[in-house]
Image (cartoon, rainbow, N blue to C red; front, side, top):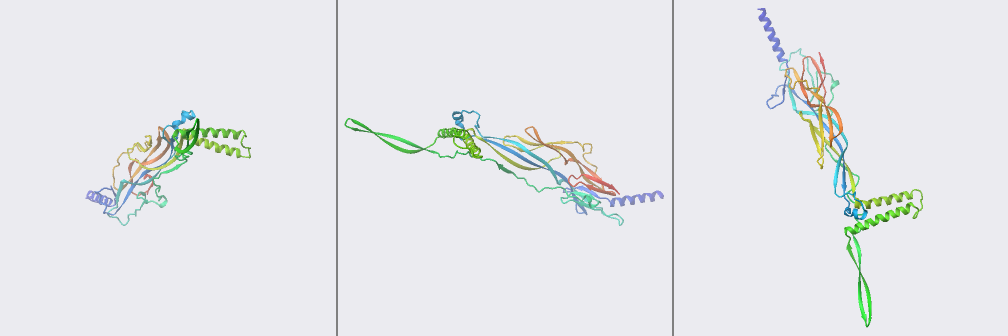
Length: 368
Protein backbone atom coordinates (compact mmCIF):
# COMPACT_ATOMS: atom_id res chain seq x y z
CA UNK A 1 0.00 0.00 0.00
CA UNK A 2 2.82 2.38 0.91
CA UNK A 3 4.54 1.54 -2.38
CA UNK A 4 1.37 2.45 -4.30
CA UNK A 5 1.05 5.77 -2.44
CA UNK A 6 4.73 6.56 -3.13
CA UNK A 7 4.31 5.77 -6.83
CA UNK A 8 1.21 7.98 -7.02
CA UNK A 9 3.06 10.90 -5.42
CA UNK A 10 5.93 10.40 -7.84
CA UNK A 11 3.58 10.49 -10.85
CA UNK A 12 1.95 13.68 -9.55
CA UNK A 13 5.34 15.35 -9.15
CA UNK A 14 6.42 14.26 -12.62
CA UNK A 15 3.15 15.52 -14.10
CA UNK A 16 3.56 18.83 -12.30
CA UNK A 17 7.10 19.20 -13.60
CA UNK A 18 5.94 18.47 -17.15
CA UNK A 19 3.36 21.25 -17.00
CA UNK A 20 6.02 23.64 -15.73
CA UNK A 21 8.45 23.06 -18.61
CA UNK A 22 9.46 25.49 -21.37
CA UNK A 23 9.59 23.86 -24.78
CA UNK A 24 11.78 25.09 -27.60
CA UNK A 25 11.69 24.34 -31.32
CA UNK A 26 13.55 25.69 -34.31
CA UNK A 27 11.29 27.80 -36.50
CA UNK A 28 10.08 25.95 -39.59
CA UNK A 29 6.89 25.54 -41.59
CA UNK A 30 5.82 22.65 -39.33
CA UNK A 31 6.26 24.43 -35.98
CA UNK A 32 3.03 25.47 -34.28
CA UNK A 33 3.45 28.98 -32.88
CA UNK A 34 -0.15 29.31 -31.75
CA UNK A 35 0.49 28.56 -28.05
CA UNK A 36 1.77 31.27 -25.75
CA UNK A 37 5.50 31.89 -26.24
CA UNK A 38 8.19 34.07 -27.80
CA UNK A 39 10.27 33.95 -30.97
CA UNK A 40 13.93 34.85 -30.70
CA UNK A 41 16.93 34.51 -32.98
CA UNK A 42 20.65 34.07 -32.53
CA UNK A 43 22.87 36.86 -33.84
CA UNK A 44 25.20 36.37 -36.77
CA UNK A 45 28.37 38.31 -37.48
CA UNK A 46 28.53 40.73 -40.39
CA UNK A 47 32.00 41.93 -41.42
CA UNK A 48 32.41 45.51 -42.62
CA UNK A 49 35.42 46.04 -44.88
CA UNK A 50 36.60 49.57 -45.71
CA UNK A 51 39.21 49.80 -48.46
CA UNK A 52 41.20 52.68 -49.90
CA UNK A 53 42.72 51.67 -53.23
CA UNK A 54 45.15 53.79 -55.20
CA UNK A 55 44.75 53.50 -58.95
CA UNK A 56 47.71 54.69 -61.03
CA UNK A 57 47.16 55.01 -64.77
CA UNK A 58 50.01 55.54 -67.22
CA UNK A 59 48.86 57.59 -70.22
CA UNK A 60 51.05 57.94 -73.33
CA UNK A 61 51.63 61.45 -74.62
CA UNK A 62 50.07 62.52 -77.94
CA UNK A 63 53.59 62.90 -79.39
CA UNK A 64 55.07 59.71 -77.91
CA UNK A 65 55.81 58.33 -81.39
CA UNK A 66 58.43 61.08 -81.82
CA UNK A 67 60.00 60.92 -78.35
CA UNK A 68 63.08 59.02 -79.53
CA UNK A 69 63.52 61.08 -82.71
CA UNK A 70 63.25 64.56 -81.16
CA UNK A 71 64.33 64.02 -77.54
CA UNK A 72 66.56 60.97 -77.92
CA UNK A 73 64.87 59.10 -75.05
CA UNK A 74 63.65 55.51 -74.93
CA UNK A 75 62.15 55.45 -71.45
CA UNK A 76 58.70 56.82 -72.20
CA UNK A 77 55.11 55.59 -71.80
CA UNK A 78 54.11 53.82 -74.99
CA UNK A 79 50.64 52.47 -74.06
CA UNK A 80 47.89 52.96 -71.50
CA UNK A 81 48.14 50.73 -68.41
CA UNK A 82 46.80 50.84 -64.85
CA UNK A 83 48.08 49.45 -61.56
CA UNK A 84 46.22 49.10 -58.26
CA UNK A 85 47.49 49.14 -54.69
CA UNK A 86 45.79 48.91 -51.30
CA UNK A 87 46.86 51.90 -49.21
CA UNK A 88 44.48 51.42 -46.26
CA UNK A 89 42.15 48.70 -44.99
CA UNK A 90 39.90 48.41 -41.96
CA UNK A 91 37.91 45.39 -40.75
CA UNK A 92 35.12 45.66 -38.18
CA UNK A 93 31.94 43.73 -37.36
CA UNK A 94 28.38 44.16 -36.17
CA UNK A 95 25.48 41.84 -35.38
CA UNK A 96 22.21 41.09 -37.10
CA UNK A 97 19.68 38.32 -36.51
CA UNK A 98 20.47 35.01 -38.20
CA UNK A 99 17.41 33.87 -40.23
CA UNK A 100 18.70 30.26 -40.08
CA UNK A 101 18.77 30.29 -36.26
CA UNK A 102 15.25 31.34 -35.26
CA UNK A 103 13.55 29.58 -32.32
CA UNK A 104 10.12 29.43 -30.75
CA UNK A 105 10.12 29.17 -26.95
CA UNK A 106 6.74 27.92 -25.73
CA UNK A 107 5.72 28.85 -22.20
CA UNK A 108 4.35 26.22 -19.78
CA UNK A 109 0.71 25.37 -20.44
CA UNK A 110 -0.14 25.56 -16.74
CA UNK A 111 1.40 27.66 -14.06
CA UNK A 112 0.98 27.22 -10.32
CA UNK A 113 0.07 30.15 -8.13
CA UNK A 114 3.36 29.84 -6.29
CA UNK A 115 5.50 29.59 -9.44
CA UNK A 116 7.83 32.60 -9.86
CA UNK A 117 7.37 34.98 -12.75
CA UNK A 118 9.74 34.63 -15.70
CA UNK A 119 11.08 37.50 -17.77
CA UNK A 120 12.82 37.42 -21.14
CA UNK A 121 14.54 40.53 -22.52
CA UNK A 122 15.09 40.72 -26.28
CA UNK A 123 17.17 43.16 -28.27
CA UNK A 124 15.80 45.49 -30.92
CA UNK A 125 16.78 42.96 -33.62
CA UNK A 126 15.07 40.03 -31.88
CA UNK A 127 18.00 38.30 -30.18
CA UNK A 128 17.83 37.28 -26.53
CA UNK A 129 19.70 39.42 -24.00
CA UNK A 130 18.72 38.00 -20.61
CA UNK A 131 16.40 35.67 -18.73
CA UNK A 132 15.16 36.41 -15.19
CA UNK A 133 17.98 38.93 -14.86
CA UNK A 134 18.40 42.50 -13.76
CA UNK A 135 18.54 45.29 -16.31
CA UNK A 136 22.28 45.87 -16.03
CA UNK A 137 22.95 43.65 -19.08
CA UNK A 138 20.17 45.11 -21.18
CA UNK A 139 22.61 46.31 -23.85
CA UNK A 140 21.60 46.55 -27.49
CA UNK A 141 23.78 44.96 -30.20
CA UNK A 142 26.17 47.08 -32.18
CA UNK A 143 24.83 48.03 -35.60
CA UNK A 144 25.86 50.22 -38.49
CA UNK A 145 23.89 52.36 -40.93
CA UNK A 146 26.62 52.71 -43.56
CA UNK A 147 25.80 51.71 -47.12
CA UNK A 148 28.08 50.51 -49.90
CA UNK A 149 29.50 53.58 -51.64
CA UNK A 150 32.43 54.39 -53.91
CA UNK A 151 34.15 57.76 -53.97
CA UNK A 152 36.74 58.79 -56.56
CA UNK A 153 39.13 61.67 -55.99
CA UNK A 154 41.46 62.48 -58.88
CA UNK A 155 44.60 64.57 -58.49
CA UNK A 156 44.96 65.15 -62.24
CA UNK A 157 43.00 64.81 -65.44
CA UNK A 158 43.68 62.89 -68.63
CA UNK A 159 44.32 66.00 -70.74
CA UNK A 160 47.77 67.34 -71.67
CA UNK A 161 48.73 70.97 -71.38
CA UNK A 162 49.67 72.66 -74.67
CA UNK A 163 48.22 69.80 -76.71
CA UNK A 164 45.23 71.97 -77.65
CA UNK A 165 47.38 74.64 -79.26
CA UNK A 166 46.91 76.29 -82.64
CA UNK A 167 46.51 73.52 -85.19
CA UNK A 168 47.13 75.53 -88.37
CA UNK A 169 50.22 76.92 -90.05
CA UNK A 170 50.71 79.64 -92.65
CA UNK A 171 51.98 78.46 -96.02
CA UNK A 172 53.40 81.08 -98.45
CA UNK A 173 53.77 80.04 -102.09
CA UNK A 174 55.98 82.09 -104.38
CA UNK A 175 54.78 82.40 -107.97
CA UNK A 176 57.35 83.58 -110.52
CA UNK A 177 56.00 85.09 -113.72
CA UNK A 178 58.51 85.69 -116.52
CA UNK A 179 57.95 88.69 -118.80
CA UNK A 180 59.92 88.97 -122.03
CA UNK A 181 60.36 92.43 -123.52
CA UNK A 182 62.52 92.35 -126.64
CA UNK A 183 65.70 90.77 -125.44
CA UNK A 184 65.05 91.40 -121.78
CA UNK A 185 63.48 88.83 -119.40
CA UNK A 186 61.86 90.15 -116.24
CA UNK A 187 60.87 87.90 -113.33
CA UNK A 188 57.79 89.12 -111.49
CA UNK A 189 57.32 87.54 -108.05
CA UNK A 190 53.85 87.03 -106.61
CA UNK A 191 53.33 85.68 -103.07
CA UNK A 192 50.22 83.63 -102.26
CA UNK A 193 49.35 82.89 -98.66
CA UNK A 194 47.28 79.89 -97.54
CA UNK A 195 46.65 77.89 -94.37
CA UNK A 196 47.28 74.18 -93.85
CA UNK A 197 46.84 71.81 -90.94
CA UNK A 198 49.85 70.91 -88.83
CA UNK A 199 50.91 67.27 -89.02
CA UNK A 200 51.87 65.33 -85.91
CA UNK A 201 55.49 65.61 -86.89
CA UNK A 202 55.15 69.39 -87.25
CA UNK A 203 53.68 69.53 -83.74
CA UNK A 204 56.50 67.40 -82.39
CA UNK A 205 59.05 69.69 -84.01
CA UNK A 206 57.45 72.80 -82.53
CA UNK A 207 57.19 71.22 -79.07
CA UNK A 208 60.85 70.18 -79.14
CA UNK A 209 61.86 73.73 -80.12
CA UNK A 210 59.74 75.06 -77.24
CA UNK A 211 61.55 72.79 -74.78
CA UNK A 212 64.90 73.99 -76.08
CA UNK A 213 63.78 77.63 -75.88
CA UNK A 214 62.50 77.26 -72.30
CA UNK A 215 65.78 75.70 -71.18
CA UNK A 216 67.72 78.59 -72.72
CA UNK A 217 65.45 81.07 -70.93
CA UNK A 218 65.98 79.28 -67.61
CA UNK A 219 69.72 79.36 -68.12
CA UNK A 220 69.67 83.10 -68.91
CA UNK A 221 67.41 83.72 -65.92
CA UNK A 222 69.60 81.84 -63.46
CA UNK A 223 72.81 83.46 -64.72
CA UNK A 224 71.34 86.94 -64.36
CA UNK A 225 71.36 87.66 -68.08
CA UNK A 226 67.68 88.65 -68.26
CA UNK A 227 66.56 89.62 -64.78
CA UNK A 228 67.83 91.02 -61.52
CA UNK A 229 66.85 89.02 -58.47
CA UNK A 230 64.29 91.02 -56.50
CA UNK A 231 63.48 88.90 -53.46
CA UNK A 232 61.78 85.67 -54.57
CA UNK A 233 61.04 86.72 -58.14
CA UNK A 234 63.81 84.55 -59.63
CA UNK A 235 62.54 81.47 -57.77
CA UNK A 236 58.96 82.12 -58.88
CA UNK A 237 59.87 82.63 -62.55
CA UNK A 238 62.15 79.59 -62.58
CA UNK A 239 59.42 77.39 -61.09
CA UNK A 240 56.90 78.58 -63.66
CA UNK A 241 59.32 77.89 -66.51
CA UNK A 242 60.06 74.47 -65.04
CA UNK A 243 56.33 73.64 -64.94
CA UNK A 244 55.98 74.75 -68.54
CA UNK A 245 58.93 72.59 -69.56
CA UNK A 246 57.44 69.54 -67.80
CA UNK A 247 54.11 70.09 -69.54
CA UNK A 248 55.82 70.05 -72.92
CA UNK A 249 57.88 67.01 -71.97
CA UNK A 250 54.68 65.13 -71.09
CA UNK A 251 53.57 65.49 -74.70
CA UNK A 252 56.42 63.10 -75.55
CA UNK A 253 57.01 61.10 -72.37
CA UNK A 254 53.40 60.69 -71.15
CA UNK A 255 52.26 61.00 -67.57
CA UNK A 256 50.81 59.13 -64.60
CA UNK A 257 47.36 59.91 -63.19
CA UNK A 258 46.55 58.78 -59.64
CA UNK A 259 43.18 58.40 -57.96
CA UNK A 260 42.01 57.18 -54.56
CA UNK A 261 38.95 54.92 -54.72
CA UNK A 262 37.10 54.12 -51.47
CA UNK A 263 34.98 50.97 -51.18
CA UNK A 264 32.83 49.54 -48.39
CA UNK A 265 31.85 45.86 -48.37
CA UNK A 266 29.50 43.97 -46.04
CA UNK A 267 30.38 40.27 -45.77
CA UNK A 268 28.23 37.54 -44.18
CA UNK A 269 30.51 34.52 -43.89
CA UNK A 270 29.20 30.98 -44.15
CA UNK A 271 29.83 28.28 -41.57
CA UNK A 272 32.29 26.23 -43.66
CA UNK A 273 33.97 29.13 -45.43
CA UNK A 274 37.76 29.48 -45.24
CA UNK A 275 38.26 32.46 -47.55
CA UNK A 276 36.29 35.01 -49.56
CA UNK A 277 37.25 37.06 -52.62
CA UNK A 278 35.76 40.50 -52.01
CA UNK A 279 37.10 42.33 -55.05
CA UNK A 280 38.96 41.70 -58.29
CA UNK A 281 40.78 44.50 -60.09
CA UNK A 282 40.55 44.89 -63.88
CA UNK A 283 44.07 43.43 -64.01
CA UNK A 284 42.77 40.18 -62.51
CA UNK A 285 44.38 40.62 -59.07
CA UNK A 286 42.17 39.52 -56.17
CA UNK A 287 41.62 41.13 -52.78
CA UNK A 288 40.82 38.26 -50.46
CA UNK A 289 39.80 37.57 -46.86
CA UNK A 290 41.33 34.49 -45.20
CA UNK A 291 39.71 33.05 -42.06
CA UNK A 292 41.90 31.20 -39.54
CA UNK A 293 39.82 29.57 -36.79
CA UNK A 294 41.46 29.43 -33.35
CA UNK A 295 39.69 26.20 -32.39
CA UNK A 296 38.12 27.31 -29.10
CA UNK A 297 34.87 25.44 -29.96
CA UNK A 298 36.54 22.38 -31.48
CA UNK A 299 35.73 20.00 -28.56
CA UNK A 300 32.09 21.08 -28.29
CA UNK A 301 29.64 18.62 -29.91
CA UNK A 302 28.34 19.73 -33.29
CA UNK A 303 24.71 19.29 -32.25
CA UNK A 304 23.49 19.65 -28.65
CA UNK A 305 20.88 17.32 -27.17
CA UNK A 306 17.57 19.20 -27.19
CA UNK A 307 16.04 19.48 -23.72
CA UNK A 308 12.93 21.00 -22.28
CA UNK A 309 13.32 23.96 -19.98
CA UNK A 310 16.48 24.91 -21.87
CA UNK A 311 17.14 27.46 -24.58
CA UNK A 312 19.63 27.57 -27.41
CA UNK A 313 22.56 29.95 -27.52
CA UNK A 314 25.75 29.94 -29.58
CA UNK A 315 29.40 30.02 -28.57
CA UNK A 316 31.31 32.01 -31.24
CA UNK A 317 34.61 30.93 -32.74
CA UNK A 318 37.55 33.31 -32.29
CA UNK A 319 38.87 33.85 -35.79
CA UNK A 320 41.95 35.51 -37.24
CA UNK A 321 41.01 37.47 -40.36
CA UNK A 322 43.64 38.46 -42.93
CA UNK A 323 43.09 40.79 -45.86
CA UNK A 324 45.55 39.87 -48.62
CA UNK A 325 46.40 41.32 -52.02
CA UNK A 326 49.10 40.04 -54.38
CA UNK A 327 50.36 37.68 -51.69
CA UNK A 328 50.81 40.47 -49.13
CA UNK A 329 48.83 40.81 -45.88
CA UNK A 330 47.50 44.36 -45.55
CA UNK A 331 45.33 43.91 -42.45
CA UNK A 332 45.09 41.31 -39.70
CA UNK A 333 42.49 41.29 -36.90
CA UNK A 334 40.94 38.76 -34.53
CA UNK A 335 37.16 38.78 -34.14
CA UNK A 336 34.56 36.36 -32.74
CA UNK A 337 32.42 35.01 -35.59
CA UNK A 338 29.13 33.48 -34.51
CA UNK A 339 28.58 31.42 -37.68
CA UNK A 340 31.82 29.51 -37.07
CA UNK A 341 30.78 28.62 -33.51
CA UNK A 342 28.73 25.81 -31.94
CA UNK A 343 25.22 25.66 -30.50
CA UNK A 344 24.72 24.94 -26.82
CA UNK A 345 21.79 24.90 -24.39
CA UNK A 346 21.36 26.84 -21.15
CA UNK A 347 19.10 25.67 -18.35
CA UNK A 348 16.14 27.82 -17.28
CA UNK A 349 15.71 26.01 -13.96
CA UNK A 350 16.15 28.53 -11.13
CA UNK A 351 18.75 30.53 -13.06
CA UNK A 352 19.43 34.06 -14.22
CA UNK A 353 21.10 34.26 -17.65
CA UNK A 354 22.95 37.08 -19.38
CA UNK A 355 23.87 36.93 -23.09
CA UNK A 356 26.20 38.91 -25.30
CA UNK A 357 23.93 40.84 -27.73
CA UNK A 358 26.60 40.84 -30.47
CA UNK A 359 27.64 37.17 -30.47
CA UNK A 360 24.81 35.39 -28.62
CA UNK A 361 27.27 33.80 -26.21
CA UNK A 362 26.32 33.18 -22.57
CA UNK A 363 28.10 35.78 -20.46
CA UNK A 364 26.85 34.97 -17.00
CA UNK A 365 24.68 32.41 -15.21
CA UNK A 366 23.42 32.81 -11.66
CA UNK A 367 21.97 29.74 -9.99
CA UNK A 368 19.15 30.71 -7.62
